[in-house]
Image 1 (spheres, rainbow, N blue to C red):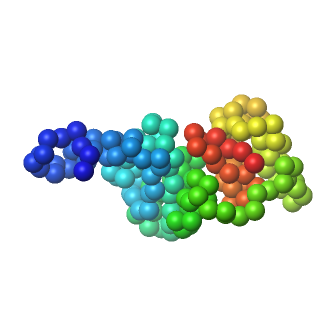
Image 2 (cartoon, rainbow, N blue to C red):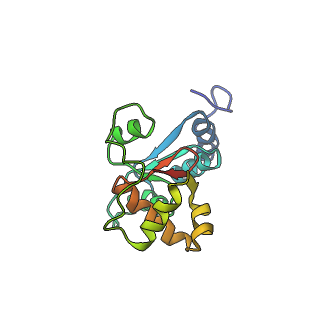
Length: 165
């Protein structure tokens, strides 16, 4: 166990976020499976974001309070949606994963916003903020566009919360 607390310290509830800040700092990324919108799990995920670590989340039913945390972090572009452990392995290049798209993806059938984002990413990796600035689009639209492009396998989120083809 890694902790800033001395051995024998009782497990007080208020100490968990402090301990989890250390744990998230030692990790390459964290996975949120279930969490209320305001919970210790979301505190840990926010520590990971502050430490420039990857945050992954398992989407859940929108009617379940225990899915509110992961769903909100996905919606806000703070967490990458995952559906199985293999998704994380692919993200870190530890498996062959799906075939990589060609250098110039097919833009047929994409919305205008999706086409604009893909065209921006052909010149290199960019953050959601850079895309907002370059395209003069609201962050909510950019985040939903990035999520739909990730689901369709056209783009991927890279470490450091940047996106690329």
